[in-house]
Length: 360
Ligand code: OSB
Ligand code: MG
Image 1: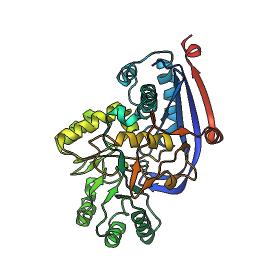
Image 2 (image 1 turned 90 degrees about the horizontal axis):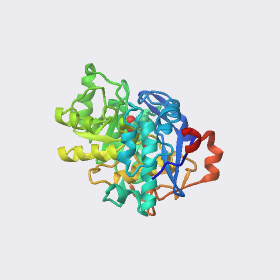
Image 3 (image 1 turned 90 degrees about the vertical axis):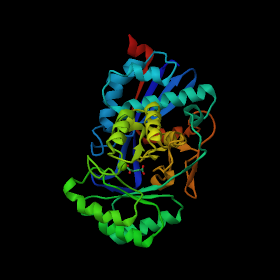
Image 4 (image 1 turned 60 degrees about the vertical axis):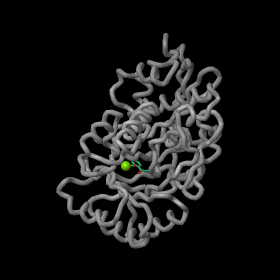
């Protein structure tokens, strides 16, 4: 498929809640959306980077520059038969995985549409309904943490993940465990702890958590998020026993092809995999769901209902979990339509790239 033109937009969107993690607070988000055109079709991709380099070095701004200056000029006007060919073209661009992933995932959407297949089928997925959990930010009090836990458990979520940080771990989690003795629970520290905090983890160990996500930059039997940037990272981590559970995020590993390879590595090691979230809008959320259809994804992911995050999401149908399960959208490609008027209203910057202008 020839990359005929691309529209890059920055959207300004407000989360329904203040999302606090060990690296900061997010609510007013600047998000990039990519529309890739080929053969009368449109493929969509979303950049999963945050406003600031708290989770990773990539940000909305670095992704804009990487796409505008380095990534899009290389691919515009070129024809690619497969996502692998597209990625090979971009092999010289080191890092900037979230920026590359927005293009790579949009390309998959295009190919699936051209083939008349839902994206999950093109990826080789198997599941048609995806069990999902919810990722709950740091709350102002233990009581509010317990209330949030109870509300999400009542909504049917299959696993609750809590953000923790030094000084905010054992007390709230002990209270949540008391309130919900049988609920699958996990915690995510976003790399905020050090080995000298081992005592905290010995205490958390008593609470029967499913896993502890990325407590530090090196680790005991754990779930790895920030440390996994490629299938090779997954292999090394599992070989070394640095983690037993792998969180796969499309943006972090450069898109669907590498995500599928990383999940295959974990499958070969017998390590459970789940799909992490990055507070995505509808395009990123839909890509997550299609990826999660792959057989390796056996644990509930973060892909909660869109209405948990947004007053109105940018796609139709809106992606909503029922009883803790998200049904995969059917129809070709992502199976969701962009709400054009809403996207226009939320757009703060827009640039259109077309093959002729960039190539001459
Ligand atoms: O570590 O999983 C993380 C959001 C932004 C950056 C990092 C993370 C997260 C989440 C939110 O946990 C998951 C979601 O609900 O989308
Ligand atoms: Mg995480």
